[in-house]
Image (cartoon, rainbow, N blue to C red; front, side, top):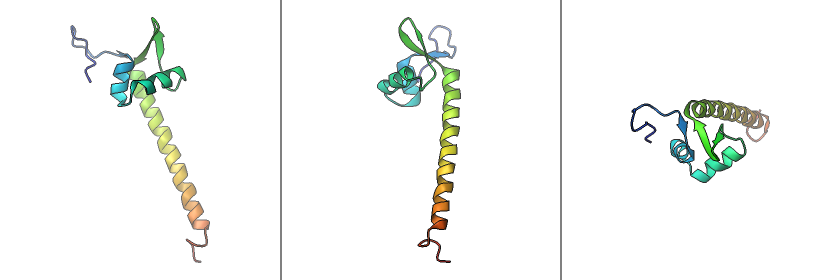
Length: 91
């Protein structure tokens, strides 16, 4: 994805819906839904949604950590269920 300013060559910190969708590899409709529901950090500028790259990166990290925590909890629950199931635990 090209998020560099054509004139300055500097990395652009503000992205639009199309750029965020490409960055996250989802369709634009998903980004609009997330923005409207405050599911992704965004702000409106002149009626259009805008996203700060650094905030999106922080959001990705936070979401990844929450998903990992959820997965770990589910794994522990499953192991407890298996351990307490007489079919799986013949002792």
